[in-house]
Each structure stands twice: as structure tokens, then as C-alpha cells.
Image 1 (cartoon, rainbow, N blue to C red):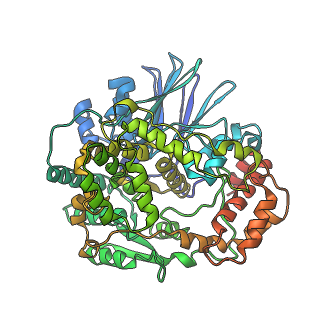
Image 2: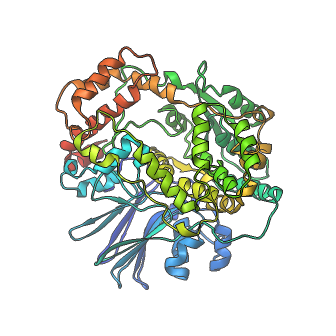
Image 3: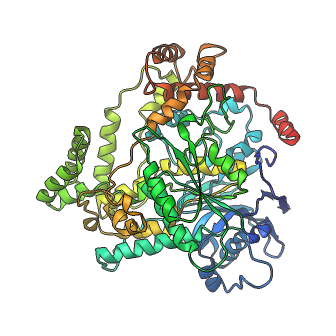
Length: 610
């Protein structure tokens, strides 16, 4: 398993074992206490503990657990999580704030308990075998246990590869492997495995606060979320797209760097798209003028050479595009600066957007406000029709409206001609329901926010970033995924989220003061889809090779004749043609061909030689 999980950086491997369990951690040090992040075998209590843990409430836990964190060698975050488990048992995850996936094997009871952080920043995959259970941070570590992995491909995940709305929590690209969903625990015994949700949104009423007080609290929590994630003994890369999320992180980091104390070098990294509608360089420059950090830029449009062989992985189809949207340059910068941490703005859009608020306004009979708000917000006709359609559902209870909305969406989706027979069966599959407390949601706004944060898409993006980072020895940190921040946003009443001209008004009011004046009149951020299409077209040689020549293992999922027709027509298109879809066809076929000849012994031997 360790050899299968390749990484360009490793500060050692530590193992521990009991009579019926063994654990190993391949480590790299970001802070000094990581040196003690090793599997622990507690002989007295017969407990084997291991995992990947980064905690941001260590001071509070030290008080609650009566720990002296400053005495002697620094106690690792994994050890603190173990102390929490010994104190609170299976309730321990509720007390932890951070990014974690940890496991406790009870040798006496012959059962395993595992937990994943509330927002799913740290992944945990598991798989039952004929004589036990195997667990790993990355899917690639479990491939040696799959008998003919090519035959164990999960069609539902192939569907989600092409259609993001079809993603389901916990599913990966192999039928026998499961990803523990965010905010869940796992209990595994000889009778089987059971997943349980331990983190739920704060549905109960909170003490009344004014809008101004809620904004002040949001700002304070965000500042702490960023400050907590700046702890490092190695340089930090902060990706700057020029958008609201990454820019607020950088400006909050600048405040923290003004405080007394030693801080590691922080490098602001930006992929530029000069000359395109999505060019946000003026906003990046506005941030760069206000912060003392080194600023490194590169041209995203030219980041992929035409002859470059695409970087793929056996864990899933698709290309290794880079951490911050910049293909490979962000990783090169990290290596050049010996960086070990990447700050990302993942989750900010989902957290701050007041989707569903018009339905609450309709339910409350605030007709005139709806009219004035839609006139202020809506310019494209398509967006106007979408809002009108959503408003019409506002009279229904939130859970009922949510379910009906997605049923209507499914009914109106027409399947593409290129779908293979197996993929056709999964195309119209139902979208997952919100898991917890559906009958008691107090507002459409809260339910919509929860469905986005709790849905598989955010977790999928996080998993991609974390897996890619771990291959390079980079710890990805996401301030907007801080559970304290999320719980506060969820607790703000819907009538305080009324847009007043902008659906992200609460975020702008609370965090906007951090930003330079250039952001004050900004409304939208343009899509990068045109940029990706241009770079995807540069993989035309790879695309043609996969679609036109060799076997077609993708037949259950993609009709080859239809793929060839799309490819032939693509030549007549400019950069906005179907190149992204064609590249997905090619990546799927390349992945399946790699799996069809997968030999775990050969793969491990290659890793060991490297």
C-alpha cells in the first residue's frame, strides 16, 4: 500500500501493529510536532491509533483534556485526537475542529472506529476484503487489493465524471471501494461496516443577533480560520485567482503577518489570462500592492504545450490539472520555494451565496421586494426564468420544494447521443437527498446552503486537490471549509440574507472591508471555461490517438462512432468547441487501458525503482 501511494516528498515511514491490525503512515513535516505523527499502539488499552490529522482548536482541547501541550516534545495532532477518543469515545469527532481522518482499532473488541472531518478536507477510503478491512487516504493504495480492477469499475462514478450533478457522496471509481462521507464515522466489526453522520447543521434557533453583529462575528471567525492555517515551518503558497475567496484569504493573511512572531515565507501565486473575459489581473495586482508577499505569475493559456504528454493516474480518469487551476506551474513554484502548504479558496462560493432566499421571500409574502430584487439582479433572460421557477416553489416546505426541484431537473434532461448502454442506465438516476433533518428545515436558504456544502461536488473538488497535493508532499488548507465559519453562516436568519442587489451581500458586507477598493464595485467573476477549452484543444494529438486508434474499452460508456463524429466536427470549431468533452473521452479510454493491464507487482517494482 505504501509503495502504491507515490509521493515526491517523504520524511519517513512509521508503522505499528497489534495481533490483528497494522498501520503505517508515510509522513512529511509541516510543523515540528508532525515528527510525532506516528501510529500508536496502546498496549494497556489494546488500541491501535493512526490517521491524518491537523487540528485548529488545540488550545481548547488542551484545557478540556487537561493536556500540557508545551511540556517536553510537542504532542502531535494525531495524539491529541487519540486523547479525545479516550476521553469521549465515539463522540470525540464532535469536539475536534480541523482537517482529520483518524482510525482506532480496538484489539479486544475486534472492531474499528473511524471518523472524517466535518467538511471532508481529509479523505479516507476503505474496502472490505475476504479476511478483513483495508483503509487508506488515497484510492491508489487500495488497487493492489482489487482483483482485476478493470472489471470493478463503478458505472455510477463514470456517469458523474461526465455529469457532475450525478455525483453521490461516498462513491469512487471502483465498486468495492468506499469514500467515507464528510462528517461521518465508520464502525467496522465482523458483522459489517456502518456509516453514521455525527455532524449536523445547527437547526435550532440561536440567540437573536443583528445583521451587523452577525457580519462582525463572520469576519472574526474568518480571520481565525485563516490565521490557524498559517501555522507552518515551511513556506506557504497562497493561490490568487483575483476572485473574492482567494483575495480575502490573502488579505486576512497579511493582517496575521503584521502581528508579532515568526512566520514562514508566503508566496502569492497567480495564473493570468491576459486578453480573455476572465482576466482578473487587475484584482490580483490590487491585492499584490497591499501585501508584502512575493508574487509569482504565469500564463494559464500557455501552460500546456501541444506535444506535452498528459499526466494521468490509475486512481481515476482525468488529467492532473494542478492545485489552484494552473495546471502544473503551481506545483513547480512550490518545489522551487520548498513550500509544504497551499492555501485554497475552495468552498467560498458555496458558503457565501444566498441561493434559495427568493423562495423564502415568496413564502413570507414579500412580493414587492422580490420584484425590485429581480430587476436589480437579473440581466440574462435565462437567469430571470430560473429565479421565477424557483420562486414558484417557495410556498412549499423547504424539503418538499428541494425534492420537487430536482425531480423537474431530471425530467427535463435529454440524454446525449454519445452515451453507451451502461452509462445510459445511470444517466437518469436520482440525485441524492439531503441526509439529515429534512422535515425540520426552517428555511429554503439554509437547506440550499446545506445541500451545496453537504453535497458531493465540494467534497469531490477537495479530494482532487488533497490527492494531487499529497503526491507532491503539499498540505492543502481551506479556510472556507472551517466548521466554525460554516455553522455561523448556517445560523444567520434568511431575512438577513436578502440580496439588496447582490446574492453574496453577506460575504461582501462582512469580509469586503478586508479587500482593496478595486473590489468594491465588483459584481461577477467570469468563467474560465474558454481557457480550459483552449488548453484542452492542445491535447488534440492525445485525443485523436485514443478515439481513432487501438481498442475501445469505453464502449459501455461512450459510443465510439459518436465520439468520432464529434471529433471530426470539432475541427471546424474555434476554441469554444467540444474539446473538453473530447478530452474526457480520451482520458476515460486511457484510464481503462491502463487498468486493463494493471499488475500490482509491476507497479510496486516501478515505484521502488523510482
